[in-house]
Every structure is written in structure tokens, then in C-alpha cells.
Length: 287
Image 1 (cartoon, rainbow, N blue to C red):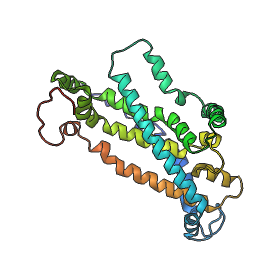
Image 2 (tube, rainbow, N blue to C red; image 1 turned 90 degrees about the horizontal axis):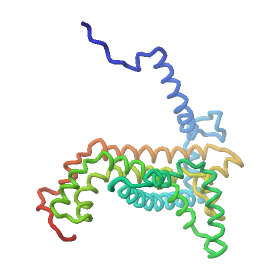
Image 3 (cartoon, helix red, strand yellow; image 1 turned 135 degrees about the horizontal axis):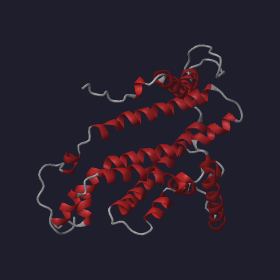
Image 4 (cartoon, rainbow, N blue to C red; image 1 turned 90 degrees about the vertical axis):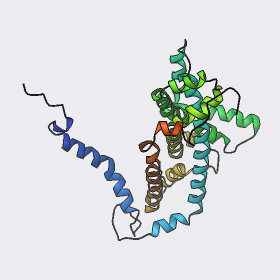
């Protein structure tokens, strides 16, 4: 009896054509943006020759430099805080027995993903406006707090997914050998969890770096990030300088992604948990 062939989606009629169209629609605008960032003229639609003019102009633009540094500062701090909070939340919701209200806790953590961003932005605007009036403080702390709150669920999802895929018997064995919870986390859980933590950190960083809506509502005067600065420029005049700035950030994103590939493709959980050679048996006590 002939063996039935496995189903292959690639053999469906029109699959190749539809896939090609989807890729073109996704990447053709990005390719166009990159190409016209090297345009010698001021048009973003008419090619006038190859030039690095707009890269030099963007590099010498003090407003672009200030906005870029502010964006990196906010995204870095917010991503770190959000990842720490997300890690603690993931541990608290996956390394305990099921409890009443567990679904409500998940929903609460992931609320920023379910609520329209404009609603979150307006709520933060009203809340921070009250604090500004009461305290008189108008610094970057509001933007960092807003970005942190919005990025927590983005960091939480990959970290929780990593925890749920981990074998908990190693942690149980460490407890049987009288290891303290902290020592178990440091020696067993964290080495196995860190690819998820890095993934959550990167995702939170990118989300914060790219945010426009919340930043536009929460920021005070003179606190433009690079996305809000570019939005303001689009309202005035559009030149290939915006293409050049976008291309640089695209290159940075690709570089970060390429450098992070070994974190999950070459990761050996057993080696991570036993890194540093043979260890003495875990015993009671703290470190």
C-alpha cells in the first residue's frame, strides 16, 4: 500500500505568488527608503544621483543628535527596568502553584497589550499632569516611567515562555539538596533563563525606541525623542535626511539582531547550568 505523502503548504496553488507579493509589500517600501537616503537631490521621489549628503547633514544636525541620544537613554533605562519587573512577574506566575485569580493577574500584566495605545497615553497624560502640578518636576522621569509601564508585557511574554519550557526538575533537585531559593535561582534558574531575559530586554528596547503615541502625549517641551522629532519634520518639509536617519536605525536594528543570534541558536541549557566546571554539591547557607 502506497504511503500517503505529508501535506506541504508550498504545493498549494498560488502559494509562491502570494508569498512573493507579501514579501514585496513588506520590504519594497524599506528598500525604497534606503535607496533614496543616498539621493543627491532634495526629492524623496526623483533620483538625482548618488550622494552621502543627507548622512553628513543628519550627522551634523544638533537636534537629531540630541533627540537620538534622548531616545537611547530613555529606551535603555526603560528596557532594563521593564525586564527586571517582567522577570520577577514571570517567576511569580510560573514558579508557584495555581491560585484563584491567576487569570486576572495575567490580564493585569498584559493590559497595555489589550488596551489601545491612545487610551494608555491619555491616561498617563492626566496622571502625570497631576503629579507635575503637585511636585513641579518636569524631567525625563515621566517618559521613562511611561515607557517602562508600556514595555513590561513585551518583556514578560518571552521570559514567561522560556520559564514554562524549562525543566523544573533541576530546581526541585537543588531544593532537595538544601539549596536556598536564591542559590537555586543563581545557579540553576538564571543560567537557563537568560536567553529569554535577553529576548525580553531587546524587545522592550525596540518598542521603547520606536514609540510615538505615548511619548507625544507625555513629553514636556524640549523632550523630543527621535521618532517625535521625525514626526514634527514630516509636518513641515520632507527631505532624504529622514531617510538617512531611518536607514541608520535600520542598520543598528539589523546589527543587534545578527549579534543576538548566537544567544538562542548556539545555546546549550545543560552547559549553561553547569558552566564553570564541576561544582561542589549544593548545601544550605547563603551566598
